[in-house]
Every structure is written in C-alpha cells, then in structure tokens.
Length: 168
Image 1 (cartoon, rainbow, N blue to C red):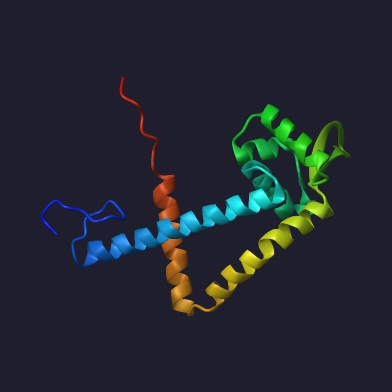
Image 2 (image 1 turned 30 degrees about the horizontal axis):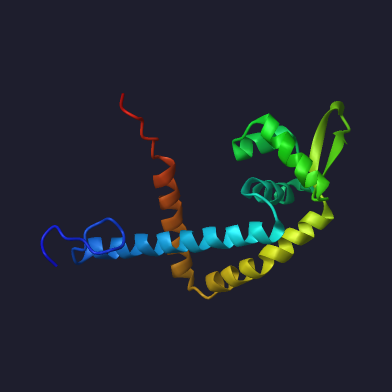
C-alpha cells in the first residue's frame, strides 16, 4: 500500500501493531452496533411499532409495577409531552399500555404496560436475549471482566463528547 493510501474499513490508519489492533476492536464494535440496529429494526417492524414505542415499553416493563408517569417517559426518551401523549394514545389503542389514575393525586396518571405487552416484548426479544446470554456465559471470568471494563470506558468516552457546533 502506498504512503497515504487507506483501505476500506475504519478511518484510522493501517499501521501494524497497537493501532491495527485498536482499529480491529473498533471495527468489531461498529459491526456489532450495525447488527444490533438491524435486529432492533426487524423487531420494531415485526411488532408494527416505532423505536420510541418499543423503548417506552421496555422502560415500563423494567419499572416496579410495570408503570411510570408520562413525565418520566418524556425525560427518558427526550421528547415533548405532546409526543408522549400521541405515542401513548397509539400504544393504548393496540392494548399495550393502559392509563391508570394516580391513587394519591387524581389529577395525574400512571402509564402501565399491559400483560399483553410484557408477553409480546419478552416473546419477541427472548430468543435474541437468550443467544446473547449464551455468548456471555461462554466467556471466562477474565474475558467477562475485560469486556465489561471496555464497554464502560467506551460509554464514558462517547458520553464525554460534546456536540460539534456549526461555525458561522
């Protein structure tokens, strides 16, 4: 390869040693993220839901009593109250959530994932989660710790990136 020439793949150079190994790690991570995004798209399509609808259901299912206030979903998803109301209307129409009165404040409500939604999400995602769990179980304790540490550091790295501001 001539000086300055790059092969297809990650945008880092192909120099041997440390940078090559780092590039391979980042390419593997990128490939995994693309595969996961495709799997999530297939899941949303099979359930006839948008991304935020699936994220909201998964959030609700993880909460005590499978319920939360709409304001919690606004904060979690980073959308407007109007968007949440529209999304909850769709989810309620399909029998995936129900609005219930707050017993301590009748002016507010909770949104609860229905047993139907819980079963649907678990059935749809269960096989994928099982396959992923099998991969993690098949690793040695040292490998597991290295992967956890790597992913935590990568999370910190991307969380610390400030948005690029456009120059005037």
